[in-house]
Length: 147
Image (cartoon, rainbow, N blue to C red; front, side, top):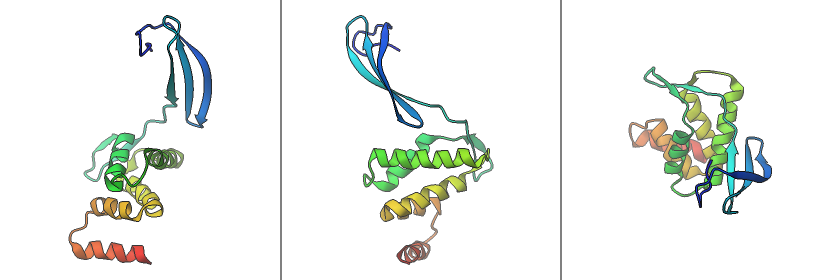
């Protein structure tokens, strides 16, 4: 790691704190220019694979899940809320021990969380995820939400 100000490699950790059970916040100081800055370290989770609908397998992408939620939420959820949702989903997937994981399972976990937090984001996400064919299937989903 290099100092963001002078690019020196001579750094020391001034303070270190757990931010949650999966990441650490570190205050660092450059020995060359005395510049102080903060870094966050995230524990690398178990590598998960996803079984796609097409039958292909790819590595689980936290960024893909975040992107899908952000599009559905349309700024209705904060970045912290989205990170919390994805952290929870990722932990459930690790705890389940399935590898590869069906993409449908991931989608269902996202839908369940969005339904509790933001009904509009839930409908947006479900419309893509469930691949509504027509307005009737969309209306059926809205009716389920009203109950």
